[in-house]
Amino acid sequence: MATSRLKVVLDQERSYDIRVGCKLLENLGTHLRELSSAKKAVIITDSNVGSLYLETTKKALVEAEFEVYDLTIPAGEESKNIEVATELWDALAMLNIGRDGLLLALGGGVVGDITGFIAATYMRGIDFVQLPTSLLAMVDSSVGGKTAINISAGKNLVGSFYQPIYVAADLDTLVTLPDAEWDNGFAEIAKSAIIDGGEFYEWVLNNVSSLVAHDDDALKQVIVRALTFKARVVIADEKESGLRECLNYGHTFAHALEQVSGYSISHGKAVAEGMRFAARLAVEVIGSSNDFVKAQDDLFDAIGLSPVAESFSSDELFECMFGDKKVRGGNLRFVFACGPGEWKVEIVDPDLAKIYIILWEQARM
Ligand code: NAD
Ligand code: GLY
Image (tube, rainbow, N blue to C red):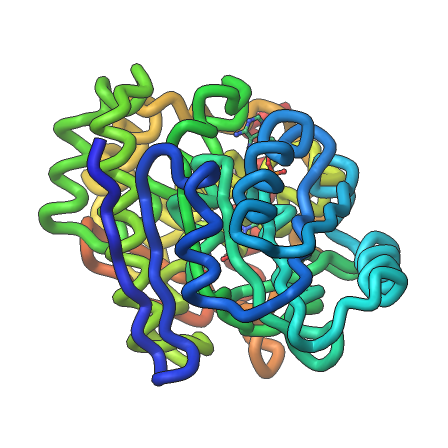
């Protein structure tokens, strides 16, 4: 399968290549040598991904004459916190990694987000590379430079915009992705397709069965389509002062759901539920049609994103929603889609949002 290449063009110093294809980890070294003169390279991975792909990645870097180190964090969202970040900063200092060092994030969105955060902050910023291994990370989190950790007040509340110097999505790694993780990627794919609309949306509708069958060619195509869309948005609005907000579709409710569930509801599943929630609220707030609510539900059902069945306290969900980054000036802001390719951000009356959250809770009792 041929490797696809995309580019995120920001400014001369911060533009970077994205590659999507096979055998990218084992052939990583040569290309990285062209991009980086670092002597020391540190691979940050998690306990699941490390046991599968660390050796291949290390070998490729050693062959390209990097002095290679690796740091492994426990797998899971619970690792995206300040304690783990402190351990990583300390470990880098112990290894004498200077500003000329290179970090590589080998894993899913958790490893990508925390490694990006470490890269942005250690020595006031060192280069890093994204090597996404989950579908979610391949279609979304590895590109665009959002780095973050969670704090007790909420998800992703501490972080920065800090771009990688290179992204390589090696499709071979998807072979070991656990069944439960595919939904997370499909949720972000559905989000991007709905927001982009047009050809991307139609393509997803027409290829759902190939996607759920994990057909190699369909997966590659959808990753390239999703990243093409994401790169376009990030190039136009890197720091989310307008257009990039569209990528938060479903996220206002999703972040609250993740937090209230103690992160037992994964990011992708929460985003899918958040889009279901937002679409229903949109009928009331912006007068969008119930036909779109149904079309969206049908797409989610077909791609295997079933509604969240557990119930959570509406009071807690409401409180968490107000901690969300999308609250500005005390206003509760929602990204709404009213059809494929049609979206807008609206301020929502908190009392109305509360009613919809109570309805959501009651429907699950
Ligand atoms: P994750 O990183 O926790 O990975 C999911 C699980 O799959 C983990 O247990 C991991 O070890 C395992 N795994 C990953 N790749 C594997 C592989 N190839 N083989 C076997 N196991 C593998 O979760 P995720 O869904 O990848 O990412 C979710 C995170 O991404 C959340 O923290 C979310 O906030 C963040 N995110 C960030 C952005 C952004 O723009 N920065 C966008 C979307 C989501
Ligand atoms: N996943 C949201 C963003 O990158 O902006």
